[in-house]
Amino acid sequence: MLAASSGSATRIRVPDLSDADDRPAPDAIVILARDPLPGQVAPQDIVARPTDINGRAVFDGVPPGAYRLLAYGDLWDDSLAISPDFYLAHQSAAEAVKLDSRENRTVRLKVSYVMSGK
Image 1 (spheres, rainbow, N blue to C red):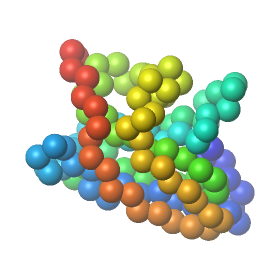
Image 2 (tube, helix red, strand yellow):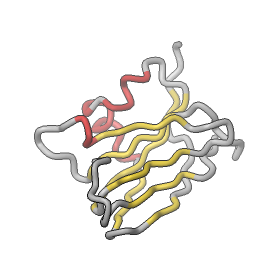
Image 3 (cartoon, rainbow, N blue to C red):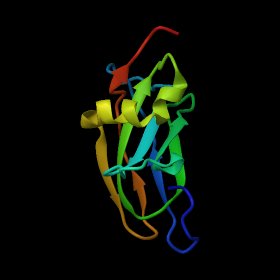
Image 4 (cartoon, rainbow, N blue to C red):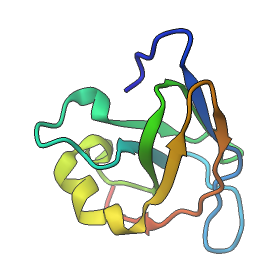
């Protein structure tokens, strides 16, 4: 997913991920997945980025296509973020994003699921 040719690469920005109280959500996980996922899921089909202290995350070099974005706070196991089974179980909460060639998109999200237990 993040290996686009230089002429068609795009960027997806999540500028201010917030929690239910509209406060920035630092250290949350934002998941970007192909939509739909292929039958054989490769590592580049689901990628994750942590948010910074202000709740921002950026995905650079995303090829044009259809994707879904999810945001989670306090995952007790960060490897869940890129698990196809975890993604498929929660994809109904995802935001759809379609990118054209050389397009940059800004997507506003809220933390959609919190799993505690760390």
